[in-house]
Image (cartoon, rainbow, N blue to C red; front, side, top):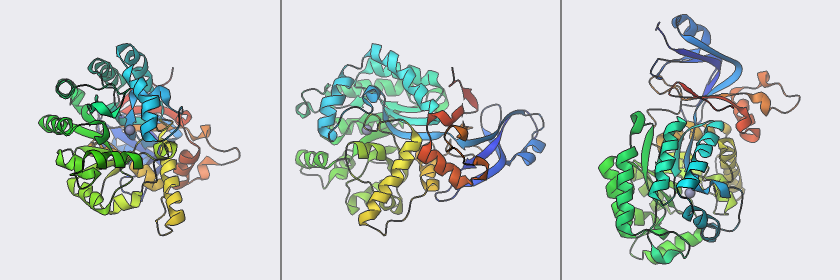
Amino acid sequence: MAGSGTILRGRVIHAPEFGSLREWRDGAVVWDATGVITDAGSARDLLARNLDARIIDVRPWVVIPGLVDTHTHLPQYPAAGIGSGELLPWLERFIFPLEHDFRVEQAERLAPLFFRELALNGITSCAVYAALWEDSCQVCFRHAEASGLRVTMGKMMMDYATYSETAPVRIVEQSLEETDRLCRQWHGRDNGRLRYAVSPRFAVACTEQLMRGAADIANKHGATIQTHLAENGEEGDVVAHRFPDARDYTDVYDRCGLLGPRTILGHAIHLSDREIDRIAESGSSVAHCPTSNFFLRSGLMDLWRLRDAGITVGLGSDVAAGPELNPWRVQRAAIETRNALAVTKPTTPALEPRHVFHLATVGGAQALGRGDETGDFEVGKQADAVVLNLSAVVPPGADVEALNADEVLALCLWRGDARMTKRVFVGGRELGIKD
Ligand SMILES: [Zn+2]
């Protein structure tokens, strides 16, 4: 196709299917003036077919699809890498005070830094929890809009008063009213680049009334739902105690109408076969957050068990339980989780960089309900692309040119971080990530 547009030329690698990579050593991605991909393949062919296009030549650097973080908490970022203990005491001691104080002033300061860090890490789409306050959530959305990223976000909801001394609890009507207002204002903004995620924290901190109301709001607006499920043993005991009529933890959400194809469940570690089948049947997705699971000693999620059941899985940093936004570190921890599981269950299939790279791109996009929009370089999707300079992380003496696509991803995953990120494009528009 001749005509104006943009050609990004470099070493193109993407993973449209789980378990395989596609690569063009001298490749290109072409998009039109609206930022929609019109072609991807070998540079020579594409240059011949797009004579009028603007050329951005980044050879020998690598071009990959924008990465996806399916689970992270903006107000918690200052606590990243700080603290200790397991989930419930960690929340009480380190997180609730932070979220309690996360008002407009804190949001104005932190939100732009947070979104900038996501972009610096090559993340172009994300699902984010904000704090409990409507005003600071407004500020977070304004900065999400300005960031140029694809952001799915929502105000944290929790109303179970006896749960915690320090948790800032809102009454149920107020929480629902604020959520509905924010959802109406922000869901679908900028052609769907911004989306609202109705965000009941987890069953420990929510009443049934709040969770049912949350599901109603999400259904009314077609919004995303995000919550936490079966992250930690003690958490599971509390839920079983609080909801004695439910069959299990998953059933608590199911009965409130919170499961479905627009739902992202964070963690999903400690689940029975029945729960896994039910999650698969409902079409809900799972955000696998392995760095967080190591940090809080929550457990080892059996990724293959979920994948084999047909559940869509993406990866999440879960900052601040996860110590960093670095999506390569999260991919690495997913492999380490599998390797740790294989010690006691040697039949667990291997997990290679190509698998977790797919989860960090296409899997994450699908989990966010953006599978038709981003995740790889298929024609018709948005041009979300990241340019990586491997020389920042290649070990001395190694020859990058000699590495195949699997080895390039392995290098990124075992040694990579934001230093590699050179340029970031969302919908064909370049973000200004460097000073
Ligand atoms: Zn979380």
